[in-house]
View 1 (spheres, rainbow, N blue to C red):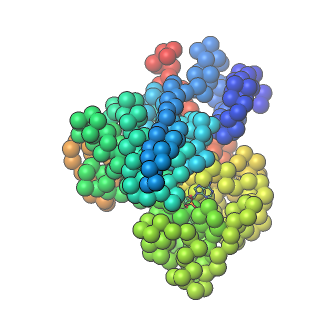
View 2: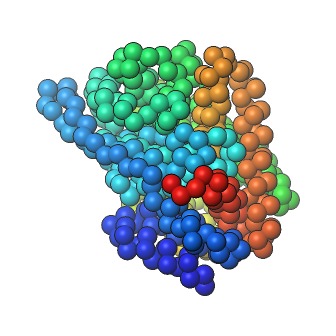
View 3: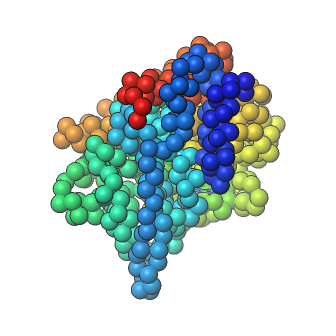
Length: 449
Ligand code: NDP
Protein backbone atom coordinates (compact mmCIF):
# COMPACT_ATOMS: atom_id res chain seq x y z
CA UNK A 1 0.00 0.00 0.00
CA UNK A 2 1.59 3.29 -1.05
CA UNK A 3 -1.22 5.75 -0.28
CA UNK A 4 -0.29 7.29 3.07
CA UNK A 5 -3.86 8.26 3.98
CA UNK A 6 -5.10 4.68 3.50
CA UNK A 7 -2.15 3.32 5.42
CA UNK A 8 -2.75 5.74 8.30
CA UNK A 9 -6.43 4.75 8.58
CA UNK A 10 -5.71 1.03 8.40
CA UNK A 11 -3.05 1.30 11.10
CA UNK A 12 -5.40 3.24 13.30
CA UNK A 13 -8.17 0.62 12.83
CA UNK A 14 -5.70 -2.10 13.82
CA UNK A 15 -4.57 -0.17 16.89
CA UNK A 16 -8.02 0.88 18.11
CA UNK A 17 -9.64 -2.51 17.52
CA UNK A 18 -6.76 -4.83 18.32
CA UNK A 19 -9.11 -7.28 20.06
CA UNK A 20 -11.40 -7.52 17.01
CA UNK A 21 -9.63 -9.68 14.39
CA UNK A 22 -12.65 -10.29 12.12
CA UNK A 23 -13.43 -6.58 11.95
CA UNK A 24 -9.81 -5.73 11.11
CA UNK A 25 -9.82 -8.45 8.44
CA UNK A 26 -12.97 -7.04 6.78
CA UNK A 27 -11.63 -3.46 6.79
CA UNK A 28 -8.21 -4.55 5.54
CA UNK A 29 -9.78 -6.50 2.66
CA UNK A 30 -11.76 -3.45 1.54
CA UNK A 31 -9.14 -0.73 2.04
CA UNK A 32 -6.44 -2.73 0.26
CA UNK A 33 -8.49 -2.52 -2.97
CA UNK A 34 -9.31 1.20 -2.78
CA UNK A 35 -5.89 2.70 -3.40
CA UNK A 36 -6.55 3.90 -6.96
CA UNK A 37 -9.89 5.46 -5.95
CA UNK A 38 -8.38 7.28 -2.97
CA UNK A 39 -5.49 8.50 -5.14
CA UNK A 40 -8.10 10.17 -7.35
CA UNK A 41 -9.81 11.87 -4.37
CA UNK A 42 -7.19 13.52 -2.15
CA UNK A 43 -9.98 15.74 -0.75
CA UNK A 44 -11.37 12.73 1.15
CA UNK A 45 -8.61 13.01 3.76
CA UNK A 46 -9.72 16.51 4.79
CA UNK A 47 -13.29 15.33 5.41
CA UNK A 48 -12.10 12.14 7.19
CA UNK A 49 -14.06 9.99 4.74
CA UNK A 50 -12.32 6.73 5.62
CA UNK A 51 -12.18 7.38 9.38
CA UNK A 52 -15.96 7.90 9.34
CA UNK A 53 -16.53 4.88 7.09
CA UNK A 54 -14.82 2.48 9.52
CA UNK A 55 -16.51 3.80 12.67
CA UNK A 56 -20.06 2.50 13.33
CA UNK A 57 -22.64 5.25 13.82
CA UNK A 58 -23.86 3.39 16.91
CA UNK A 59 -23.31 0.11 18.79
CA UNK A 60 -26.00 -1.11 21.15
CA UNK A 61 -25.15 -3.93 23.55
CA UNK A 62 -27.66 -5.29 26.03
CA UNK A 63 -28.55 -7.98 28.56
CA UNK A 64 -30.97 -10.73 27.47
CA UNK A 65 -32.30 -12.67 30.49
CA UNK A 66 -34.62 -15.64 29.85
CA UNK A 67 -35.88 -18.67 31.74
CA UNK A 68 -35.11 -22.18 30.48
CA UNK A 69 -37.39 -25.22 30.71
CA UNK A 70 -35.88 -26.18 34.09
CA UNK A 71 -36.89 -22.78 35.46
CA UNK A 72 -33.27 -21.62 35.59
CA UNK A 73 -32.58 -18.01 34.59
CA UNK A 74 -30.04 -17.68 31.78
CA UNK A 75 -28.36 -14.49 30.60
CA UNK A 76 -27.04 -13.81 27.10
CA UNK A 77 -25.61 -10.73 25.44
CA UNK A 78 -27.49 -9.00 22.61
CA UNK A 79 -26.13 -6.54 20.02
CA UNK A 80 -27.25 -4.20 17.30
CA UNK A 81 -24.60 -2.38 15.30
CA UNK A 82 -26.07 0.50 13.27
CA UNK A 83 -23.08 0.94 11.03
CA UNK A 84 -23.95 3.44 8.33
CA UNK A 85 -27.36 4.91 7.50
CA UNK A 86 -26.32 7.22 4.68
CA UNK A 87 -28.27 5.31 2.00
CA UNK A 88 -31.40 4.47 4.01
CA UNK A 89 -32.67 2.87 7.24
CA UNK A 90 -30.12 0.45 8.72
CA UNK A 91 -30.77 -3.03 7.32
CA UNK A 92 -29.11 -6.35 8.13
CA UNK A 93 -29.76 -9.68 9.80
CA UNK A 94 -29.70 -11.00 13.34
CA UNK A 95 -27.36 -13.90 14.13
CA UNK A 96 -27.90 -16.26 17.08
CA UNK A 97 -24.74 -18.34 17.52
CA UNK A 98 -22.37 -18.92 20.47
CA UNK A 99 -19.48 -17.37 18.50
CA UNK A 100 -21.20 -13.96 18.31
CA UNK A 101 -19.16 -11.10 19.80
CA UNK A 102 -18.57 -7.43 19.00
CA UNK A 103 -15.88 -8.17 16.41
CA UNK A 104 -18.17 -10.50 14.44
CA UNK A 105 -21.06 -8.00 14.66
CA UNK A 106 -18.86 -5.14 13.45
CA UNK A 107 -17.38 -7.07 10.54
CA UNK A 108 -20.84 -8.15 9.43
CA UNK A 109 -22.20 -4.59 9.79
CA UNK A 110 -19.28 -3.13 7.82
CA UNK A 111 -19.74 -5.66 5.00
CA UNK A 112 -23.48 -5.01 5.01
CA UNK A 113 -23.00 -1.30 4.23
CA UNK A 114 -21.15 -2.18 1.01
CA UNK A 115 -23.51 -5.00 0.09
CA UNK A 116 -26.59 -2.86 0.50
CA UNK A 117 -25.05 -0.10 -1.63
CA UNK A 118 -24.55 -2.61 -4.45
CA UNK A 119 -28.25 -3.53 -4.48
CA UNK A 120 -28.99 0.12 -5.52
CA UNK A 121 -31.97 0.01 -3.12
CA UNK A 122 -32.45 2.65 -0.37
CA UNK A 123 -30.97 0.75 2.60
CA UNK A 124 -28.14 1.52 5.02
CA UNK A 125 -26.11 -1.18 6.77
CA UNK A 126 -26.45 -2.78 10.20
CA UNK A 127 -26.21 -6.14 11.91
CA UNK A 128 -27.19 -7.69 15.22
CA UNK A 129 -27.55 -10.86 17.19
CA UNK A 130 -26.64 -12.70 20.33
CA UNK A 131 -24.27 -15.34 21.68
CA UNK A 132 -27.37 -17.45 22.40
CA UNK A 133 -27.07 -21.00 21.03
CA UNK A 134 -30.41 -22.20 19.58
CA UNK A 135 -29.10 -25.76 19.15
CA UNK A 136 -30.91 -28.22 21.41
CA UNK A 137 -33.33 -25.60 22.77
CA UNK A 138 -37.06 -26.33 22.93
CA UNK A 139 -39.53 -24.26 20.97
CA UNK A 140 -40.69 -22.59 24.20
CA UNK A 141 -37.14 -21.64 25.12
CA UNK A 142 -36.58 -20.14 21.68
CA UNK A 143 -39.79 -18.12 22.07
CA UNK A 144 -38.89 -16.81 25.54
CA UNK A 145 -35.42 -15.86 24.35
CA UNK A 146 -36.76 -14.01 21.27
CA UNK A 147 -39.30 -12.14 23.42
CA UNK A 148 -36.64 -11.01 25.89
CA UNK A 149 -34.31 -10.00 23.03
CA UNK A 150 -37.08 -7.88 21.50
CA UNK A 151 -37.95 -6.25 24.86
CA UNK A 152 -34.77 -4.23 24.43
CA UNK A 153 -34.29 -4.21 20.64
CA UNK A 154 -37.71 -2.59 20.05
CA UNK A 155 -36.38 0.74 21.38
CA UNK A 156 -33.85 0.94 18.58
CA UNK A 157 -35.68 -0.27 15.44
CA UNK A 158 -38.59 0.80 13.20
CA UNK A 159 -39.64 0.62 9.55
CA UNK A 160 -37.85 3.95 8.83
CA UNK A 161 -35.10 3.50 11.43
CA UNK A 162 -33.59 0.03 11.37
CA UNK A 163 -35.05 -3.15 9.89
CA UNK A 164 -33.52 -6.45 11.08
CA UNK A 165 -33.93 -9.84 9.34
CA UNK A 166 -32.60 -13.40 9.79
CA UNK A 167 -29.07 -14.79 9.59
CA UNK A 168 -27.40 -17.86 11.13
CA UNK A 169 -29.74 -19.34 13.73
CA UNK A 170 -32.57 -16.92 12.93
CA UNK A 171 -35.17 -18.20 10.46
CA UNK A 172 -38.91 -17.69 10.01
CA UNK A 173 -39.76 -19.23 13.42
CA UNK A 174 -37.56 -16.72 15.28
CA UNK A 175 -38.70 -13.78 13.12
CA UNK A 176 -42.31 -14.73 13.99
CA UNK A 177 -41.65 -14.61 17.75
CA UNK A 178 -39.67 -11.35 17.42
CA UNK A 179 -42.42 -9.72 15.35
CA UNK A 180 -45.16 -10.84 17.75
CA UNK A 181 -43.36 -9.30 20.72
CA UNK A 182 -42.67 -6.03 18.84
CA UNK A 183 -46.36 -5.76 17.92
CA UNK A 184 -47.44 -6.40 21.53
CA UNK A 185 -45.06 -3.88 23.11
CA UNK A 186 -45.64 -1.13 20.54
CA UNK A 187 -49.35 -1.86 19.99
CA UNK A 188 -48.62 -1.24 16.33
CA UNK A 189 -48.89 -3.42 13.23
CA UNK A 190 -45.70 -2.15 11.64
CA UNK A 191 -45.08 -4.88 9.06
CA UNK A 192 -41.96 -3.23 7.64
CA UNK A 193 -40.03 -3.38 10.93
CA UNK A 194 -38.67 -6.88 10.28
CA UNK A 195 -38.18 -8.89 7.08
CA UNK A 196 -38.15 -12.62 6.49
CA UNK A 197 -41.67 -12.76 7.95
CA UNK A 198 -44.07 -15.66 7.35
CA UNK A 199 -46.11 -15.46 4.16
CA UNK A 200 -49.37 -15.24 6.11
CA UNK A 201 -48.42 -12.01 7.90
CA UNK A 202 -46.51 -9.76 5.52
CA UNK A 203 -43.59 -11.86 4.29
CA UNK A 204 -42.50 -11.85 0.66
CA UNK A 205 -42.67 -14.77 -1.71
CA UNK A 206 -39.16 -15.86 -2.76
CA UNK A 207 -37.45 -14.26 0.30
CA UNK A 208 -36.58 -17.72 1.67
CA UNK A 209 -34.96 -18.71 -1.63
CA UNK A 210 -33.43 -15.29 -2.38
CA UNK A 211 -29.87 -15.51 -1.04
CA UNK A 212 -29.18 -18.96 -2.53
CA UNK A 213 -30.89 -18.24 -5.85
CA UNK A 214 -29.21 -14.84 -6.03
CA UNK A 215 -25.79 -16.43 -5.52
CA UNK A 216 -26.39 -18.71 -8.49
CA UNK A 217 -27.68 -15.83 -10.67
CA UNK A 218 -24.45 -13.95 -9.91
CA UNK A 219 -22.42 -17.11 -10.66
CA UNK A 220 -24.27 -17.55 -13.95
CA UNK A 221 -23.33 -14.02 -15.02
CA UNK A 222 -19.72 -14.34 -13.85
CA UNK A 223 -19.25 -17.65 -15.66
CA UNK A 224 -20.98 -16.31 -18.79
CA UNK A 225 -18.65 -13.30 -18.89
CA UNK A 226 -15.76 -15.76 -18.86
CA UNK A 227 -17.14 -18.18 -21.47
CA UNK A 228 -18.45 -20.82 -19.04
CA UNK A 229 -21.80 -22.12 -17.74
CA UNK A 230 -22.94 -24.13 -14.73
CA UNK A 231 -24.31 -26.93 -16.88
CA UNK A 232 -22.52 -30.21 -16.19
CA UNK A 233 -20.21 -28.66 -13.57
CA UNK A 234 -19.44 -30.53 -10.34
CA UNK A 235 -20.34 -28.31 -7.38
CA UNK A 236 -19.64 -28.54 -3.63
CA UNK A 237 -21.59 -26.41 -1.13
CA UNK A 238 -20.65 -25.96 2.52
CA UNK A 239 -23.44 -25.58 5.05
CA UNK A 240 -26.96 -26.97 4.80
CA UNK A 241 -28.91 -23.98 6.07
CA UNK A 242 -31.02 -21.43 4.26
CA UNK A 243 -28.37 -20.16 1.83
CA UNK A 244 -26.85 -23.57 1.03
CA UNK A 245 -30.19 -25.31 0.39
CA UNK A 246 -31.49 -22.76 -2.13
CA UNK A 247 -28.11 -22.37 -3.83
CA UNK A 248 -28.21 -26.13 -4.33
CA UNK A 249 -31.77 -26.00 -5.68
CA UNK A 250 -30.96 -23.35 -8.32
CA UNK A 251 -27.59 -24.91 -9.26
CA UNK A 252 -29.34 -28.24 -9.87
CA UNK A 253 -31.99 -26.47 -11.94
CA UNK A 254 -29.16 -25.08 -14.12
CA UNK A 255 -27.83 -28.60 -14.69
CA UNK A 256 -24.97 -28.67 -12.19
CA UNK A 257 -24.13 -31.87 -10.27
CA UNK A 258 -23.99 -30.90 -6.58
CA UNK A 259 -22.00 -33.69 -4.88
CA UNK A 260 -21.39 -32.43 -1.33
CA UNK A 261 -22.96 -30.39 1.48
CA UNK A 262 -22.03 -30.04 5.17
CA UNK A 263 -22.82 -28.79 8.67
CA UNK A 264 -20.51 -27.90 11.54
CA UNK A 265 -19.86 -31.58 12.36
CA UNK A 266 -18.96 -32.91 8.91
CA UNK A 267 -19.88 -33.29 5.27
CA UNK A 268 -21.66 -35.75 3.03
CA UNK A 269 -20.27 -36.79 -0.34
CA UNK A 270 -22.92 -38.04 -2.78
CA UNK A 271 -21.21 -38.69 -6.13
CA UNK A 272 -24.54 -39.31 -7.89
CA UNK A 273 -25.87 -35.93 -6.83
CA UNK A 274 -27.38 -34.63 -3.60
CA UNK A 275 -31.04 -35.52 -3.02
CA UNK A 276 -32.20 -32.08 -1.93
CA UNK A 277 -35.59 -33.24 -0.63
CA UNK A 278 -33.76 -35.35 1.94
CA UNK A 279 -31.62 -32.38 3.05
CA UNK A 280 -34.72 -30.19 3.38
CA UNK A 281 -36.45 -32.81 5.51
CA UNK A 282 -33.40 -33.28 7.76
CA UNK A 283 -32.58 -29.56 8.16
CA UNK A 284 -35.79 -27.57 7.64
CA UNK A 285 -38.26 -29.95 9.28
CA UNK A 286 -36.46 -32.29 11.69
CA UNK A 287 -33.51 -29.98 12.58
CA UNK A 288 -31.07 -32.94 12.74
CA UNK A 289 -27.39 -33.43 11.86
CA UNK A 290 -26.39 -33.90 8.21
CA UNK A 291 -24.99 -37.39 8.93
CA UNK A 292 -28.67 -38.54 8.88
CA UNK A 293 -28.46 -38.20 5.08
CA UNK A 294 -26.88 -41.66 4.85
CA UNK A 295 -30.31 -43.11 5.70
CA UNK A 296 -31.66 -41.58 2.46
CA UNK A 297 -28.80 -42.38 0.06
CA UNK A 298 -26.82 -45.63 0.35
CA UNK A 299 -24.16 -44.47 -2.14
CA UNK A 300 -23.26 -41.43 0.01
CA UNK A 301 -20.31 -41.15 2.41
CA UNK A 302 -20.00 -39.07 5.59
CA UNK A 303 -16.69 -37.37 6.46
CA UNK A 304 -16.32 -35.84 9.92
CA UNK A 305 -14.72 -32.40 10.36
CA UNK A 306 -11.50 -32.63 12.35
CA UNK A 307 -9.24 -29.56 11.92
CA UNK A 308 -10.62 -27.81 8.87
CA UNK A 309 -13.81 -28.51 6.86
CA UNK A 310 -13.36 -31.81 4.99
CA UNK A 311 -15.57 -30.63 2.13
CA UNK A 312 -12.82 -28.57 0.46
CA UNK A 313 -10.83 -31.75 -0.27
CA UNK A 314 -13.57 -33.05 -2.58
CA UNK A 315 -12.83 -32.55 -6.28
CA UNK A 316 -15.10 -29.93 -7.86
CA UNK A 317 -15.28 -27.31 -10.63
CA UNK A 318 -17.21 -24.83 -8.49
CA UNK A 319 -17.11 -24.35 -4.71
CA UNK A 320 -19.81 -22.43 -2.85
CA UNK A 321 -18.93 -21.64 0.79
CA UNK A 322 -22.36 -21.04 2.38
CA UNK A 323 -21.76 -21.72 6.09
CA UNK A 324 -19.69 -19.13 7.97
CA UNK A 325 -16.71 -16.75 8.05
CA UNK A 326 -13.15 -17.94 7.41
CA UNK A 327 -14.15 -21.46 6.40
CA UNK A 328 -11.63 -21.48 3.51
CA UNK A 329 -8.04 -20.89 4.60
CA UNK A 330 -4.88 -21.05 2.48
CA UNK A 331 -4.52 -24.82 2.96
CA UNK A 332 -8.08 -25.46 1.73
CA UNK A 333 -7.59 -22.99 -1.15
CA UNK A 334 -4.50 -24.90 -2.29
CA UNK A 335 -6.42 -28.18 -2.21
CA UNK A 336 -9.30 -26.71 -4.24
CA UNK A 337 -6.91 -25.31 -6.88
CA UNK A 338 -4.98 -28.61 -7.03
CA UNK A 339 -8.32 -30.32 -7.72
CA UNK A 340 -9.07 -27.99 -10.64
CA UNK A 341 -11.63 -25.54 -9.20
CA UNK A 342 -12.49 -22.74 -11.67
CA UNK A 343 -14.85 -20.58 -9.59
CA UNK A 344 -15.70 -19.77 -5.97
CA UNK A 345 -19.06 -18.22 -5.04
CA UNK A 346 -19.25 -16.76 -1.55
CA UNK A 347 -22.75 -17.39 -0.15
CA UNK A 348 -21.58 -16.88 3.44
CA UNK A 349 -20.11 -13.59 4.66
CA UNK A 350 -16.29 -13.43 4.48
CA UNK A 351 -15.94 -17.24 4.12
CA UNK A 352 -12.52 -16.94 2.44
CA UNK A 353 -9.61 -15.49 4.39
CA UNK A 354 -7.25 -12.96 2.82
CA UNK A 355 -4.43 -15.42 2.03
CA UNK A 356 -6.93 -17.74 0.37
CA UNK A 357 -8.45 -14.89 -1.70
CA UNK A 358 -4.99 -13.87 -2.91
CA UNK A 359 -4.16 -17.49 -3.74
CA UNK A 360 -7.33 -17.94 -5.80
CA UNK A 361 -6.83 -14.65 -7.67
CA UNK A 362 -3.16 -15.45 -8.38
CA UNK A 363 -4.24 -18.81 -9.80
CA UNK A 364 -6.87 -17.27 -12.10
CA UNK A 365 -9.79 -18.75 -10.15
CA UNK A 366 -12.92 -16.60 -10.56
CA UNK A 367 -14.14 -15.32 -7.20
CA UNK A 368 -17.67 -14.03 -6.62
CA UNK A 369 -17.26 -11.91 -3.44
CA UNK A 370 -19.86 -12.18 -0.66
CA UNK A 371 -20.78 -8.48 -0.65
CA UNK A 372 -22.00 -8.84 -4.19
CA UNK A 373 -22.85 -12.52 -4.59
CA UNK A 374 -25.00 -12.98 -1.48
CA UNK A 375 -26.78 -9.61 -1.73
CA UNK A 376 -29.93 -11.28 -3.09
CA UNK A 377 -31.22 -11.88 0.45
CA UNK A 378 -31.10 -8.29 1.58
CA UNK A 379 -32.31 -7.07 -1.82
CA UNK A 380 -35.40 -9.24 -1.50
CA UNK A 381 -35.84 -8.05 2.08
CA UNK A 382 -35.98 -4.53 0.64
CA UNK A 383 -38.61 -5.77 -1.82
CA UNK A 384 -40.51 -7.15 1.19
CA UNK A 385 -40.37 -3.64 2.73
CA UNK A 386 -41.72 -2.15 -0.51
CA UNK A 387 -44.62 -4.60 -0.56
CA UNK A 388 -45.36 -3.84 3.12
CA UNK A 389 -45.42 -0.09 2.38
CA UNK A 390 -47.78 -0.63 -0.56
CA UNK A 391 -49.94 -3.03 1.52
CA UNK A 392 -49.77 -5.32 -1.47
CA UNK A 393 -47.79 -8.36 -2.63
CA UNK A 394 -46.09 -9.58 -5.76
CA UNK A 395 -46.20 -13.16 -7.09
CA UNK A 396 -43.22 -15.52 -6.69
CA UNK A 397 -42.29 -15.02 -10.34
CA UNK A 398 -42.46 -11.23 -10.06
CA UNK A 399 -40.13 -11.17 -7.04
CA UNK A 400 -37.81 -13.76 -8.55
CA UNK A 401 -37.57 -11.80 -11.77
CA UNK A 402 -36.70 -8.59 -9.89
CA UNK A 403 -34.08 -10.55 -7.90
CA UNK A 404 -32.52 -11.89 -11.10
CA UNK A 405 -32.38 -8.36 -12.52
CA UNK A 406 -30.77 -7.00 -9.34
CA UNK A 407 -28.10 -9.74 -9.27
CA UNK A 408 -27.30 -9.25 -12.95
CA UNK A 409 -26.95 -5.52 -12.33
CA UNK A 410 -24.66 -6.14 -9.32
CA UNK A 411 -22.40 -8.33 -11.46
CA UNK A 412 -22.26 -5.64 -14.14
CA UNK A 413 -21.28 -3.00 -11.55
CA UNK A 414 -18.46 -5.24 -10.24
CA UNK A 415 -17.24 -6.01 -13.75
CA UNK A 416 -17.32 -2.37 -14.85
CA UNK A 417 -15.49 -1.05 -11.79
CA UNK A 418 -12.86 -3.83 -12.01
CA UNK A 419 -12.20 -3.04 -15.66
CA UNK A 420 -12.19 0.72 -15.17
CA UNK A 421 -9.56 0.48 -12.42
CA UNK A 422 -7.37 -2.11 -14.19
CA UNK A 423 -8.34 -5.10 -12.03
CA UNK A 424 -9.42 -7.34 -14.93
CA UNK A 425 -11.56 -10.19 -13.58
CA UNK A 426 -10.83 -9.38 -9.91
CA UNK A 427 -14.47 -8.91 -8.87
CA UNK A 428 -13.44 -8.61 -5.20
CA UNK A 429 -11.85 -5.27 -6.04
CA UNK A 430 -14.69 -4.44 -8.43
CA UNK A 431 -17.35 -4.91 -5.72
CA UNK A 432 -15.44 -2.86 -3.15
CA UNK A 433 -14.81 0.01 -5.55
CA UNK A 434 -18.35 0.14 -6.97
CA UNK A 435 -19.89 0.15 -3.48
CA UNK A 436 -17.40 2.60 -2.00
CA UNK A 437 -17.96 5.18 -4.73
CA UNK A 438 -21.69 5.15 -4.07
CA UNK A 439 -21.37 5.40 -0.27
CA UNK A 440 -18.65 8.06 -0.42
CA UNK A 441 -20.69 10.23 -2.78
CA UNK A 442 -23.71 10.14 -0.45
CA UNK A 443 -21.53 10.78 2.62
CA UNK A 444 -20.00 13.80 0.97
CA UNK A 445 -23.44 15.15 0.04
CA UNK A 446 -24.76 14.77 3.59
CA UNK A 447 -21.90 16.66 5.27
CA UNK A 448 -19.77 15.82 8.30
CA UNK A 449 -22.04 13.71 10.48
P1 NDP B 1 -28.38 -21.08 8.74
O1 NDP B 1 -28.40 -20.97 10.21
O2 NDP B 1 -29.65 -21.38 8.02
O3 NDP B 1 -27.32 -22.21 8.30
C1 NDP B 1 -25.98 -22.10 8.65
C2 NDP B 1 -25.24 -23.34 8.14
O4 NDP B 1 -23.84 -23.14 8.31
C3 NDP B 1 -25.60 -24.58 8.92
O5 NDP B 1 -25.45 -25.71 8.09
C4 NDP B 1 -24.53 -24.58 10.02
O6 NDP B 1 -24.24 -25.87 10.55
C5 NDP B 1 -23.32 -24.05 9.28
N1 NDP B 1 -22.45 -23.32 10.21
C6 NDP B 1 -22.78 -22.25 10.96
N2 NDP B 1 -21.75 -21.87 11.74
C7 NDP B 1 -20.76 -22.73 11.47
C8 NDP B 1 -19.45 -22.86 11.94
N3 NDP B 1 -18.94 -22.04 12.86
N4 NDP B 1 -18.70 -23.87 11.44
C9 NDP B 1 -19.20 -24.71 10.51
N5 NDP B 1 -20.46 -24.64 10.03
C10 NDP B 1 -21.21 -23.66 10.50
O7 NDP B 1 -27.71 -19.74 8.20
P2 NDP B 1 -27.79 -19.08 6.76
O8 NDP B 1 -27.82 -20.13 5.72
O9 NDP B 1 -28.84 -18.05 6.79
O10 NDP B 1 -26.39 -18.30 6.71
C11 NDP B 1 -25.20 -18.90 6.21
C12 NDP B 1 -24.20 -17.81 5.83
O11 NDP B 1 -24.79 -16.97 4.82
C13 NDP B 1 -23.80 -16.86 6.96
O12 NDP B 1 -22.47 -16.45 6.76
C14 NDP B 1 -24.72 -15.67 6.75
O13 NDP B 1 -24.18 -14.48 7.31
C15 NDP B 1 -24.75 -15.61 5.24
N6 NDP B 1 -25.88 -14.88 4.68
C16 NDP B 1 -27.18 -15.26 4.94
C17 NDP B 1 -28.22 -14.58 4.37
C18 NDP B 1 -29.64 -15.02 4.54
O14 NDP B 1 -30.51 -14.45 3.86
N7 NDP B 1 -29.94 -16.00 5.37
C19 NDP B 1 -27.99 -13.39 3.53
C20 NDP B 1 -26.60 -13.12 3.25
C21 NDP B 1 -25.60 -13.84 3.83
P3 NDP B 1 -24.78 -26.27 12.02
O15 NDP B 1 -26.25 -26.46 11.87
O16 NDP B 1 -24.03 -27.49 12.37
O17 NDP B 1 -24.42 -25.09 12.92
